[in-house]
Length: 390
Image (cartoon, rainbow, N blue to C red):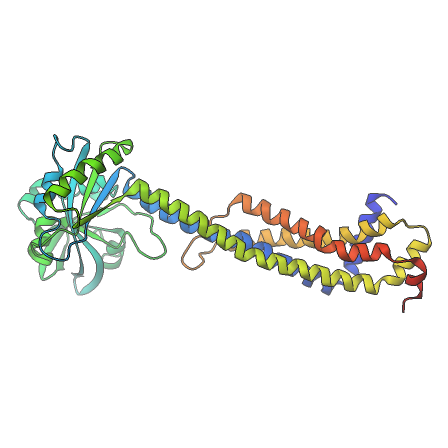
């Protein structure tokens, strides 16, 4: 008997009990789809966070205050960092105050958690350019003019179908004139980067935050390769001006590296958890094939009595088990591809091609491994014992 005939007999065996075969393939389908989708969710989450970090610019450093008392990060400290002698590789320094605020326009209100007060250099350093209108100027900052640039979400909430540039919104009881709208920026599933507003720091301090310490200082290096050098330069200045225990520095490139390592671990863990369902599917194949061998004992006895060698019987049942795994695995891949088009827990899954190949390969191995015991049992049956089976 050639291979094609063995496969034909295997397919006939699968088709003999369609419901049982479908249920067996369903177990593999769920396992393969779970592995691919969970790895895709982990990868999508990692990619989303990486995009957000890279969008900030990998040539930036954020100095954040850890001091709860007086002092800490002040405008004077920010000015000291922009020192061409002590910090020659610094391209720009942007002091930042951030507070929550409610914007009101013609009776409509929109609350944002990130109303940013800063200087004009912030737009370039943070890689957050203006899409329409214009950013505020150094003169606006010097004169503490009440002008503001809003994010896309704010524009959609307050000015649906209307150009917001040139219109006025009320913030903290004061009127701010909108000069521009920020370019849309990708967001993670937990925070909308476009739900923000940016104004001159002098105006924000006058109206909203007061003249206390800064929330942070954004430092831009001249080149991404100089970030570590710039960190050393500004650390020396900060230790002298603010004190070593009053700040911490967030390095975008180091943050991206740490995030990547964490994401890889998280994705691997998700894949390992999902792989358990594949193992369960394999156990299901063993049970179903053992039942199949029991039901077809007389058939096996007849075929052996007619001269079918042991390897033919072994091959037939192995092929049956493998086909169940392959078909179920293929359907699982299709289900995962369809599922990846939808957001899962706020994350857009990104399928990893290697996870597809791995899941399919494992499904084939599961068919061979878990189908091996029933196939070996069928091949070991003596014709006389099989023919006597009732």
